[in-house]
Length: 303
Image (tube, rainbow, N blue to C red):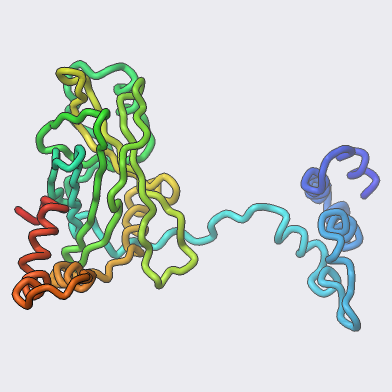
């Protein structure tokens, strides 16, 4: 039988020979018994993993102890996810997104968006958008669309950057999705500008890293060479491609920052370099001073 498999699968790797041997098992009961013989599977294992046929001291070779048929069929094929992803504990109703976009040092857009309003596509796009944008909006790729309450204009000759925080209302905690990233890639023909940042994952998940959050501005021609933004898209294509996967991903963010600790965290990070007057040092350590700094950095706290 192995000769039949060898002739049929000449020039193929062990995966091809495995398929032919599996096909032999479907011919008849006698062929099935022959095809399950460990001698045949040992030859396949010896070609793919020669070390599995070697013994160490008095112990049996791993193939001898487990059975070469079981060994080869267990590891030769890519295993699909055996269990479905657990249902997330979060819902979009529990979330609030805080979006801030800057042009140079000036805030051009600042909004608090309820998680329930985040949708999988942009509704009611403006008239006059280009065909490439229409194709993008009609695509089936999963993206979270953050509604823009009022359209605004940007000029990419300036430094455009974005920050995005998310708040869990059920626990009153804050996490960072995008710290302060610039729109370094502008897709002119596609009328989109892209920025990304790496997610800050909780220390409870030390082996999860390098997951990027992408944010895109959807553009249409504006006045005087400027571009008008009519939509904002957010996606985690490295790791999440539907609502449940996104919510499970957001659950493992670093949520250690409580709202009431936000200002004190900024205050503690300060370093007063000089030994100035007592009154000045007292002002530098008050929450009022750091609150003013935060209001300049993150405008949504003014609301």
